[in-house]
Length: 198
Image (cartoon, rainbow, N blue to C red):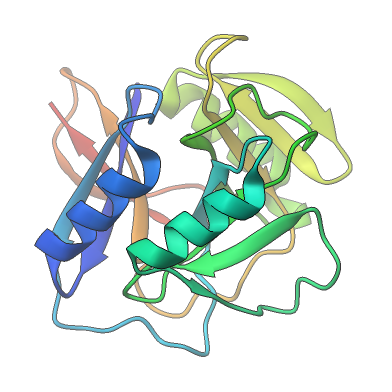
């Protein structure tokens, strides 16, 4: 079962505070876990996994609130899109989705975990993560696949292209709980690290 996201952090306490305030406790039951690292995020590489937050009807105010918490607007070449791209205090990209964005089932908090998947890996990754996460495909589109724990679950796992080049170990990683499995760090079907815990 998919139960959380592990995030490398230079300052785990600061990152925990930022994200706790950013999502305001709304994570769909998923745990955000911060683990210390001494390696900063490379500014030249976009993360392969990022989080999407709902902006709600007053999305501009929500973006301003997140910036006041320590987020920074960033340009990753997104162009004119119906969401805002920010970076957390350690440079990890995340998106704030505007009202009417497809697949958003809540007005605030975490609403999607986005995993870059190359076109040729789409079906293998969808099958792999349905098995590992215990979540089910609820949408198949040209842009990718959306999984949810239940059809009404507020958080979805979205997989699709383009896939950012793999540049070392991923800073954000999915975490699954499997009482019958050996705990540790493993690789998914496309070489992304993920964690298994009891």
